[in-house]
Image (cartoon, rainbow, N blue to C red; front, side, top):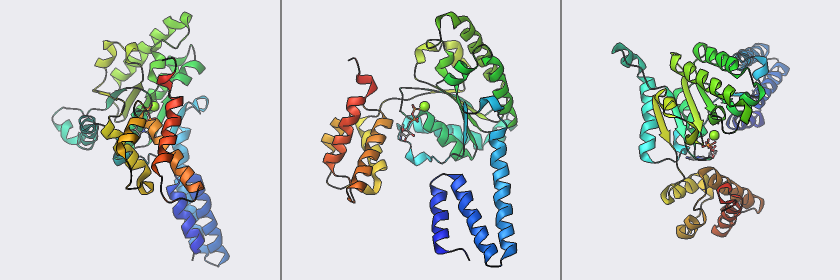
Length: 323
Ligand SMILES: Nc1ncnc2c1ncn2[C@@H]1O[C@H](COP(=O)(O)OP(=O)(O)O)[C@@H](O)[C@H]1O
Ligand SMILES: [Mg+2]
């Protein structure tokens, strides 16, 4: 049998969301079994690993070689419970999930589930996270297309690259997130390339419109100014993200600190200190505080530590610069 240590490592690596590490330990178990004379079992374990690896590899390999690094494929692990958003928004995210699950029923009435989604809102408010939650809830692979990098790298042939991506969207059902999608919008592109950007944007819109795949297509942007109404029409749903309200900040801090939270919190100060920060910044401050507590051999994050970390985030907060 596998040693207790191996079993513990297996479990740990499973939750560390590092599949390669998981595979390595599983192979160690196989080697261990082989050493004990359990050849058939060792063989079975190796077979299982090889099969899983081939399937995972296939997921990544389907993207053309030169797109590596521009498309990140991952197995989604983010669950809905971690996402702190207003109820109105949650209902809409849940509706996307519900309609996807009930798509056959809708189809019999000639209706399609909502699957082209536009997410708009400031950085760090949960747009990328929402796409990951969708993938996790729908048990679909997640592919993040880094639009800004795609545009910079394939200047002049971006449309051709987009076509390849949309071919894959058709062939391989998944959640496809066009992240920082406003890079196509134009503002960040060079002046003399505005014409090119227009063309790219138009072809992107066309691809979206023509798409009849089973995939979920999510586009996320920080700058709605760049997007014209023509674009909005192409999507089945447009969701707006905002900075967290005090209530949401409290929920977020409670979620992230979890077992490190003390009951002695004076929320008033903490909420004042976290005002103006995005979800991502608060999340980071909480993680910094947990790290510090662990290094100080403390079981809990005390309020002064959290305040200190929130203050640090306030000082580096992007929105504050130049104010
Ligand atoms: N609404 C949210 N609820 C909980 N955590 C969040 C939320 N928004 C952001 N975070 C945290 O910040 C990280 C980065 O957020 P992200 O989803 O990438 O923001 P965006 O895509 O809007 O810029 C997330 O992985 C998560 O840890
Ligand atoms: Mg994002």
